[in-house]
Image 1 (cartoon, rainbow, N blue to C red):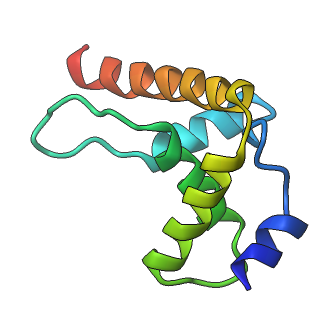
Image 2 (image 1 turned 90 degrees about the horizontal axis):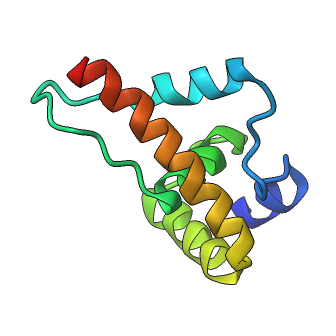
Length: 100
């Protein structure tokens, strides 16, 4: 079921961030922990976030994780690089708020 939603929903590669407001909303979704340790968002975690955001209903974690794993393993190296660069930007933004 989730496979169909992902296939028929918004495009996940490249990441669905089209303007600065989308970027800021994504950054706000990853709140830093109260321990004030640096946040480190990984690329599959970001893909997981976009899939959950796109889903029409709530799915079990194991179902979402399986879809993320399948998509991540089957995508191209260029798509992975785009996600990694976006994660670096998000981590930088969040961690600058913590440290600065």
